[in-house]
Image (cartoon, rainbow, N blue to C red):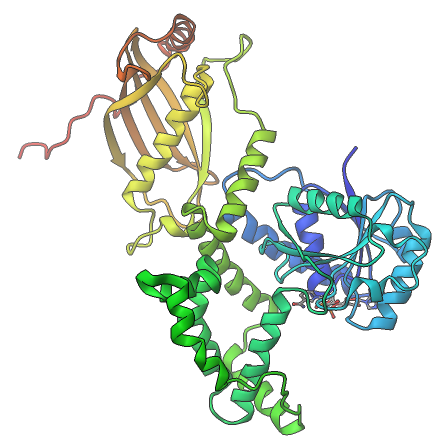
Length: 492
Ligand SMILES: NC(=O)c1ccc[n+]([C@@H]2O[C@H](COP(=O)([O-])OP(=O)(O)OC[C@H]3O[C@@H](n4cnc5c(N)ncnc54)[C@H](O)[C@@H]3O)[C@@H](O)[C@H]2O)c1
């Protein structure tokens, strides 16, 4: 049976939850009294699909379906979790949570997205608060992996464990807050920054654009990979953290910041902020700004994934889990081998595109290399064990025929041209899905290697038999036109 969740509230955060759950294969039952909620959620889902398909080449599970329901109790029916994302008002949340708790089956987890209200406070009216916790996400919920989990006084440890596993299976990174506290971990820091930002505008020291630049042109770039403590350790030079604390610790006594002092949100201050913010937005709608933000987040996540750090490490882990759930294709006796093999697909990611506006030439070889790996897996060469040896590339001839552009979906077809016990000769073609354009070809020769002795050695008999079977079938195909070409200027 498909997994399902109930959502209370489908605004910025509830809509983001809907998108994350649906795109990870969960069905969603959504309750929101706003008649516009379904439209808003649909628009957010479209943006989420757009972002997630360009983020990762690993296929997502089949998308879940969304059902709009008329009461909180209906949202709780047949689901494993109810996630509340209603407005940040204590009495409203307490009443809603008590109502859904009374209606939900006892095993249903209940979580609140509150930005900072303590779970013990929110659970006051609940008859069965052992299954209740705070699960505080970050906007956009479908792209940012952090979710802070905070238990209340009456939350059962087993509920925390179930929640940790559930959010982890969505590709999120649960951070369990060690002690119940208002604002949890992240919003404590964000609130301090936000307060300073308001003072700087209030006091006429900087405009909203200048405050944003002060973050995104400097420290903001470091935070995605290093956080704050690692950043400062590095800032301490060779002597590290102790030196940094000695140098900058005394400055904390001065202090530069306004601490918990808050500027009064006068009409004048609000007008200034709103006018400057409108100017910053330059007439772009909320959805358009979300797309700009998402495109940048996708590029940052992809760059961090390449370094296996921070949110990139979380993404890589989730992709491995999704790939493991979708086992690699291995040749089967019933496979039709009369056509070229089609074993690998990819997408042109933002980080692949060079100054010419198309994929850098190294990316073509990367895609062909990945297609060769898919071929080896298909032949029964297990990348994890490699006990029987593997094929190493000894020669490649790439032809670039058309440009591969950002977000193009690519597929590779492969023809076996020759085989002997130690060598394998293949011809790959790279196609763009949609218009079917042939973008590039690669002719490659591999030599079989004993991966322990690191020397050429015959392929294992079963692998060889599989290649020979494909080769025999592919002998009936026309030889690719570009096979065997040499490089040169005709007549020159
Ligand atoms: N916006 C953020 O960046 C952010 C980040 C993390 C957590 N949160 C928290 O998420 C929660 C929701 O915030 P938001 O930004 O999505 O607000 P929002 O105003 O965008 O959405 C709230 C939604 O709740 C609906 N609603 C109103 N009364 C309701 C009821 N009785 N039952 C169910 N739904 C009801 C509204 O129609 C609206 O669609 C808040 O607790 C907030 O603190 C917000």
